[in-house]
Image (cartoon, rainbow, N blue to C red; front, side):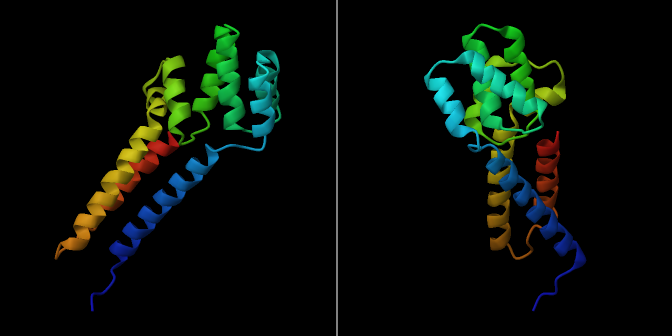
Amino acid sequence: MASIKTRDLFAGAIIFLFLVLCFYYHQKGRTGQWHSTTVSLWQKEDWGKLQALGDNLYRVGKEDTEAYFLAMLASEQAQNAAKTKLFAERLANTRVLNWKMETQLDRIYQPDSLRKRITLFRTRIIYSVLFLLALLLAVSVARKNPYRMAPAILSVFGMIVLLL
């Protein structure tokens, strides 16, 4: 019977933490408690109220990614470039994993720093890391001497991207 080394436990804990963070940020990008309100305002094409909702939620500290996303699109519809950029920055700072939001954000928002540019590709980078991690773990199981630290190093890279 193979003994479990401290190094293996450490690597497993890092991989587990990365997967928990991925799940958390993915769930954060799903519909929030303001879903029905934002969808109703969007269908009515009430761009001003959508922007006001996004502003008010930000002001009181209630982060709702869907409200920020629709407020950004409403600002674009109202041709308010300053508000569009403001909501795009707020949405980029939420660290969600949502492909649809990210691609729309990429189309609208042109960041000025490398860190902010990475946020525009966060979901794509993390999904790639998850794919590589799964592939690496599958290959590792088939090997006589499995990879031990490579999956953990890949997970650390993913966590750094998530936390940027």
